[in-house]
Image (cartoon, rainbow, N blue to C red; front, side):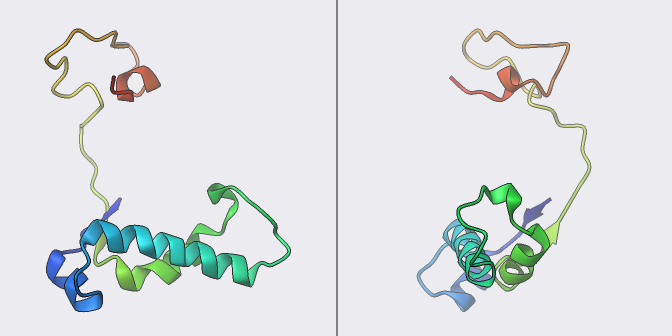
Length: 100
């Protein structure tokens, strides 16, 4: 899943901003609203927050949010220019995602 926020939509919402900046800012805003709505929660990890509520706050700033199934894995297009210690048996191993 991901946001397909265009630069045109971004500039309509927030002039002089880019899509990445607005997407990140929307997450900060959602976190602040969640904290105000949950004052007794204290300091929490992001995955302890209600993601549905956070997305509800973020949606006006994200543009279309869509998901696509593909056959892509971190091993697609690898190896690159340099030798790597890849885990070919487990494509989703952290070793295959880590870039050195």
